[in-house]
Amino acid sequence: MSYASNDEIRGVLISAGAERVLLPNATVAEMMSRVPVQAVDDAPRWLVGEIGWHGWQVPLVSFARLSGLGEETVAGHNKVVVLKTLSGNPERPYYALLTQSFPQLISVPRDGLLADASEENLPDIVHMRVLLGEQSALLPNLDALEAALDSLTA
Image (tube, rainbow, N blue to C red; front, side, top):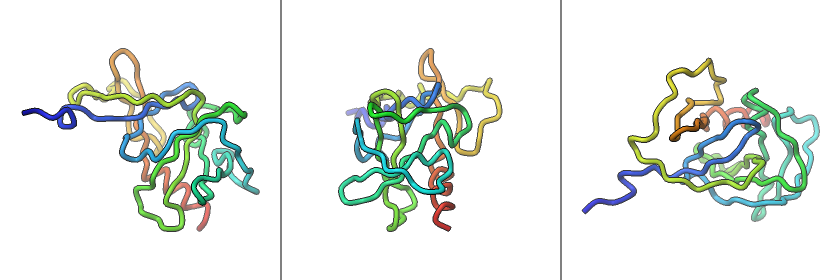
């Protein structure tokens, strides 16, 4: 008997500027659209603001700005993906990423996730670029992303 979960990796594909970012499905708490964003005083450009989510004030991050690989505009039609932190930080158990299009749930065969060997130097926030069929996507370094958020409160 074979289980699909052993043969496939489930992920959520979002757009971040001109890039596509592949997130592990297990970290995604919710996908939402048209979410009001509250500005945060003296925040770096990559911290778009905060959103209210189930009683939490969740930081909203522009992955494109944080990685330095692009620009994203913040408008009323934006979508957000709320992620569970890997660090287990009780003060900030969630954060959100901005995306321009609705996130896409995908299944990638384990042997189908190939590193793009032609890749240029990537920022620390990016673990690697992978090929998904004919297109590429970035695998984010979620630990580095959470460390950037932690540095704001330090």
